[in-house]
Image 1 (cartoon, chains in turn yellow, blue):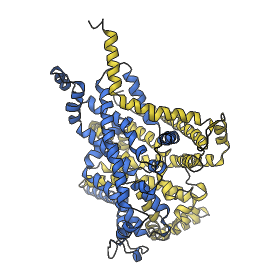
Image 2 (tube, rainbow over the protein chains, first blue to last red; image 1 turned 135 degrees about the vertical axis):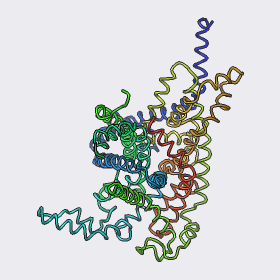
Image 3 (cartoon, helix red, strand yellow; image 1 turned 90 degrees about the horizontal axis):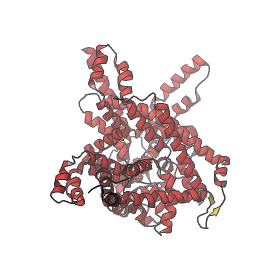
Image 4 (cartoon, rainbow over the protein chains, first blue to last red; image 1 turned 180 degrees about the vertical axis):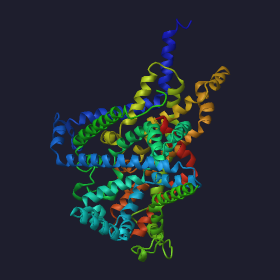
Length: 324
Length: 276
């Protein structure tokens, strides 16, 4: 029976499957495949939005290679990713290990770390703007408290090496955080650390998956706490670290809201906090260069895919999967 | 023994310091919002005489219409929430329970689309909505939610796969249809997973800046996040106690939601991170 009706039952299965999954594939075609197709075409066009697109070949992509602002935002985004991802990973893993200690009030401590990640970025950017105010902000208030200590340290360094550290001197005096290129980038990276809560939660869950026997065996072998962390905890967490690094990678290439609000929609001191997505946004919706913006979007997609593939390849040796 | 208690004291000191560091900006926001205007530039952390002046002034300001922005945000939230729950769970059920040729490939494509960041499709999506005449309306912010989202479909499918098939099989023997199985068996059993999807969706809508920034053109359509950004971009003449009051008003509902559903949040993040 079944044999004879194979065609019809197969057809019916396909029909019912397509019906159930319709919300997804309709959305996929309408809001992803179609826009991406249009975007690919537009990226080979000159399209100032108000006039119809004109095919210009690879002119947009060629223009990108000569655009100093494009080079600047590319560099800024890379620098930000290179600072924020490793630093964020280290801080998150250490915090997770700390929050995993069995102490009273553990839940409360975890809540405190996690709360910042649910807060709207715009609201919190405003708070940081005021915290980083050079004269009245809380940050420079704290810096001024320890200023003499920093100055003392700098004097000691000057005695030992013969020259003072400029950045330490600036820090001790309370820098104009968002008005100076290096300090603005530093501020953004530090603020990104404040939102480290959701990777911490994932690491905490990852810590529960590491079998207790491994720690017991390591203790029997006389391994100290740091050695246990290095040889048991880190390898056990490595798949989770890989996951978070990739999520972080995709996220940092999209950084927009925080610098946009902090710099009032502008490019920051000497364009130092002008990032890829901000320039893409400006090209599209400020200068109405839709073709150029689309070319940037495709370059961005390829960069993200290439970096993700690179991280996967590089991690093949470093990541330890239990049971394989 | 002494080393152990020293260790414990050190752990507590570290934990308290770190926890304070993380909540400090939020505490400061509330403190500044409660200061009288004359005290804003003073270095004291706590306001000497807490007052609601900042809130009263910002509520009267033409630059920040909290109630209107809240209404707009809630309209988008409700319309898109219903859509995202219905469409994602239907599609997820299809991927989990309805075998059909090409299902594996289709699901792989669905997963792959999670990799595509929004900025990449920002320009063409804008053009699409412009063609439909939707720019300057709330529609671009909630209609796409009715077509499922890859991440939610993935999350719900994993949850559905964990529910024993026998429940549906016996229901179907009793004459229950596929839709009946989905609606009367799967959905009620999936409340925890649906709660996770709903929570993350609420957060994403409440916090979204770039979507409203691109699609909304008039101040009377602004969402809270966009309204706050707008206020901030013109903040030259708005005193800081008012700005912080506005921030507190936007942040508070999220914090409230978080404290009411903390367990769901944290379990949601942990499972998506580990199984993803």
